Image 1 (cartoon, helix red, strand yellow):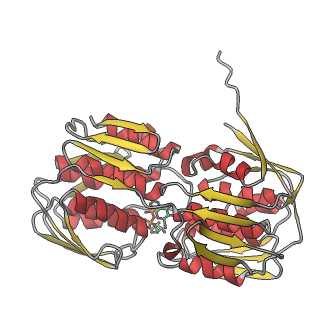
Image 2: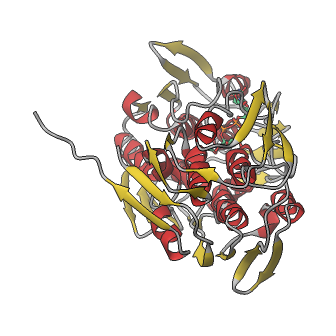
Image 3: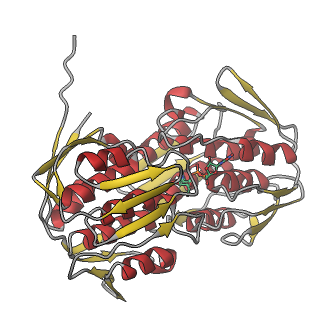
Length: 422
Ligand code: UD1
């Protein structure tokens, strides 16, 4: 397990280019199962989660070539429908193979998902929606086993606009007989990006990106080419790091229309935000002000921003109240921030954070992807050198994070753990 060391005190300055969105690329790769032949997905971030998805698709019989951000995905043959435990455990997003496998093969066996240790993360919305489409699902020895002689269109209202449930249902519905409507669907830009790819494959989808999606099943889908949307969470991470370090960062490739509420919070914190051909520029000239915020499904502030915005506020002026509405248990990492001197109290799904002038470096652990990014931001404004262990979580979600940080003027380095063989 690698460790990342961050020296505090740097002011981030310069330009950084945002990679393709992990939460889009993973689904685009999985959707490629639907069309016999070779599809091409561009702007795939070089991160571990995408490599894991590639391995899983190969396990099903696909031929996958991932190089320089381009994924060539040959789904001419799909001979296995079991998503094995050792891969699913590494990444909860593996659940998105369920819909396409069912649509392509009429059956799927997916190990119950692992990945980030955040909250309960059940799969009832995936299961309930698929059942309405004629799928028989049972749980067997830690696997979800799903079978359908024929998928049929259905009218589905989700209790909650779950991102991956919406995507699984959409990917199953594109080959179902008749029309499927998904009400209270997720509106995330990555879900709309997936729909655009499916449409390029010949699917009929209307309303993606809104809370009602209508899908008319078709008899076949054909290979397509698509470029993954820019990663709004990565863009926001650089923006928040710029504010925390009182820096001046231009984020290239960022899509500000996907970051509206998030950016309005940075503006409230005192950031000067502008957009030009060079990218999204975030400039902070004095200590940030504390800002309250609430996480919600899109277009609300993403739960993935919660740790990042909290770390940004650890050294802000004033007190902020933060409400986490999406995942229970997503404040676990605040214990690590407290080790660094942050003044945070949590109660249920609320956190109260009182800004302190400076944090102090400490050995800390990255508990998940975004908690890892939060600790890096904290390390940048701490006295001394912060040592972050379990950094592989960060690598699951961010491409070239250390290199990008260094280019912005941060002093960071990595220590690789040497494995001693018996
Ligand atoms: C996706 C993102 C993740 C992000 C999250 C919320 C991917 C690969 N991951 O995760 O980065 O943090 O959206 O924006 O795109 N729920 C149920 N039953 C279900 C499904 C979900 O109760 O069947 C609950 C979850 O426990 C959670 C909430 O719904 O409380 C949101 O989960 P969901 O939108 O499904 O998140 P993911 O799709 O897993």
